[in-house]
Length: 359
Picture 1 (cartoon, helix red, strand yellow):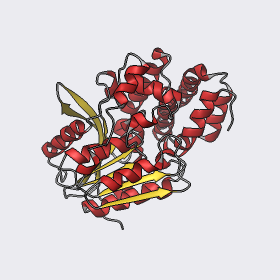
Picture 2 (picture 1 turned 90 degrees about the vertical axis):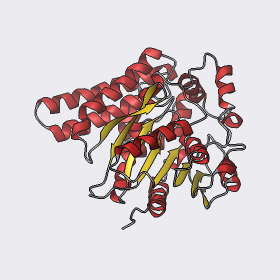
Picture 3 (picture 1 turned 135 degrees about the vertical axis):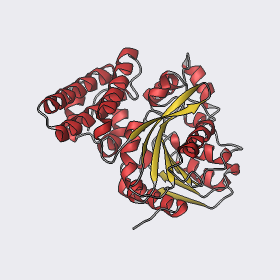
């Protein structure tokens, strides 16, 4: 798929596999929406238009009493609102409209989702984090996988991967930490993501219906930095998966797409791009990776245009616990083009580490 605008083309080159394989977008919806765009300024408005059209179809199905169809269409609208706003920050009104529409639609259909999903508040410092929780059908207390979004993903789209873990006997808690999803409106992102994981495990211990002594982390993209970072400092983490995260974000800051740098400025609450770069310098595993002692699985794609695969190799080389590095020659960023390889490996590996099941 080609477009004359270089920013639109860069987004398509980087995230089209994520849109199709991770967000559940339909190829022709992407094509028709992109064809209406003249420049990057049109990205947000045109995707919000496509999302609104899908939302209108959902409302028609809802009014007719066709709840199964309505939920499916609302989920599609939710995904399209997210695609529209996630790295589109130049128009704050459009950005916030897309985010709040995504959240509102997801909350509306929450009671109808299968498997069941519970929205939870996690006490954190003077406020709270937010999460989506699902558990397998078992009378026993299952181990838990904490799913960690990246810079611009959220608990809503990351929780789409929960069924693979539920099937393997593990509960899933997907969180919006500082600077992520709806939490980004009141907490900026921070390098010290272990603070969020400590609060989340504290919450799991209080719940009492899960085994908080067997907790795994799974983070992708910038979450692939957050997860190993948290595992280095929070000793209650049993095992950790990092997918295509940077070793040192500042080293790749000029390499990542321009709109991603703009999104980083948005989610870090920086007042300028120079301030955003200074914040990025704090997101490093230098002197940190060596503190990782739990089992560690780092996945990478050799074709990742954002972060070099050597970042993952370095994380594993410095970690001191049991570790494994898998670099897929054909893999792109976050391995969205080969989820049938990367996601199944991560789910099976975490099941083995946490005491879940693989059959």
